[in-house]
Amino acid sequence: MEKVINPKKAVFLFNADHPKGEMFTLTQEQLEAKLEDGWFDTPARLDLPEDNDTGLTEEQVSNARPEDLVKLVESYGFIVLTPDQLKAEANKMAEAAFNPANLTDETIIEEAERRGLKQSDKGADELNALLDRFNEDPKSLNKEEHIILGKSLGLTLRSNFGEDTMIAKITEALNEAE
Image 1 (cartoon, helix red, strand yellow):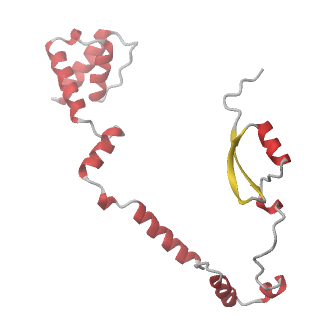
Image 2 (tube, rainbow, N blue to C red):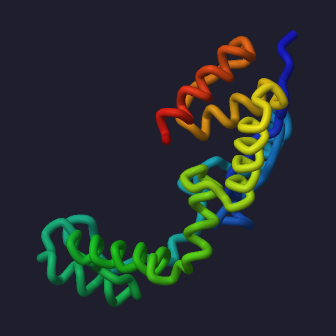
Image 3 (cartoon, rainbow, N blue to C red):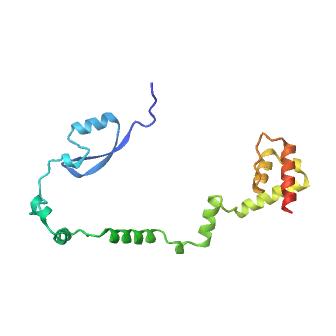
């Protein structure tokens, strides 16, 4: 028997009372019951009265000049844009949504620390403490601390390495750094 983690799924359905649609989270059985009760998965299946007649036939629209069609569509309250105008509007919206000038230095530093691009002051203090302990007695660190210290020096140490191997690699890296 196959285990189903979440049998419900989000579905957008339409009916005569809700021609703009409504979102439901339903199981397959509930969905089938809704469809039997007069709900549809597309508004095209609704039998709604035609109250949005434009007064133009399909032939008149296909033979109309583009300028006349633009004026007609604008008269209904829509905005008509060329592809270049649409792209320019999208760029304006993107700039308004994210403006780097609005970022503070603290915000940028926090984000860099969160992504691991910059070490936090707290992390630097911890590393300095590890380095001090290592310089006093390398064997006082456990394997995990050796790996962390090695990583800060650009080394790739693994937990299956011997303690002496880790100490030798860290010592070598520290000597090269001086």
